[in-house]
Amino acid sequence: MRMPLFRKTKRWVTIASAMLLSSLLLAACGENSPSILNPRGPVAAKEADLFYIILGIATFIFIVVEGVLIYSIFRFRERPNSPAPRQIHGSNAIEIAWTVAPSIFLFIVLGATIYYMFTLTDFDTGNRFKVNVVAHQWWWEFDYMNYPGSNGHPIVTADTMHIPLGATIEADLISNNVIHSFWVPALSGKKDVVPGHNNQLIFRADAVGTYPGECVEFCGSQHAHMHFDVVVDAPDAFNTWISMQQQAATPQNINAVKCTTPIPQSDLVACGAKFFAQGACVGCHGIVGVDLKGYDDPRAAGLIGPNLTHFGSRDLIAGGVLPNTPANLATWLSNPQAVKPGNDMPQLGLPQDQINALVAYLESLK
Ligand code: CUA
Image (tube, rainbow, N blue to C red; front, side, top):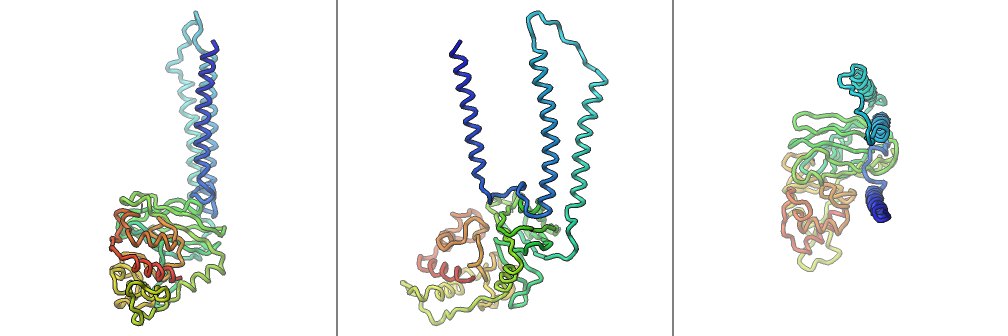
């Protein structure tokens, strides 16, 4: 009699340790992982409230149904010589009860959902901070329509979206390719970014911090690598960021440097600018303030790559795949297709000293 009991215990120990292990793994999704249950603004907070209401109702139903089920299994289990159970097929009372009860619960969920839908942006006074959010395959562009840069065109950045604390944000969602979906779990629910139909997302951030965002509509082979960060700045820090972004880049004296191998350390930045201006980079990218074949508007249709004017000030590169560090940028420049297969940046086969110079130059663009 002892052995089976021991075996049973062993099985339960295995199940319990598997559950413990998986909960540890899930707990490893740190503080900064996107979660709708960590709201940092009124829209996300209301959506979290609705989640808890539905979870509460579902938990109540689960406990009642499972409780009745388990009670019945034990109380009415078959015993030796037990008579056939009472047959209740076609009982009107029971049929009505299990139709009406779920309807009541579903109507409560419907009512709560409609209530939250219509009060989601109650805080909106109409005084909005507008940002155009442009989805590319596979990176995000952010255009600050009310903040012209030195050349009169809006500030255009990529991968990292800065917004001011406490402002009502109107994100106009734009795509000229396929359908994407914009989602910052800590701040708001998802909204599709549809070509030919610009959606709007209204939200507000009530805590300074960096919040991860994701594309949540399948948009091609690198859909899973279309991250971005939303950085919520206190008003002063935000104004500092804006005035920095409004400035044009400082042109380098590219005619004064030779840039033959080995490039002296002191010429690295200027040589990077030279390789940038004279190489393939300018076919897709622009830098405001540097005369690159008459480049002016960062949103010009021909420029399919991100505007690099303040590249060095961003947290993320390559559509959010890599943190912005010199080593990561060098990896990206040496073989972008290995980092993110299928993206628009070709492998240029750049020699190492050109890569070093380009890294030095791009990271200097703060
Ligand atoms: Cu963009 Cu998925």
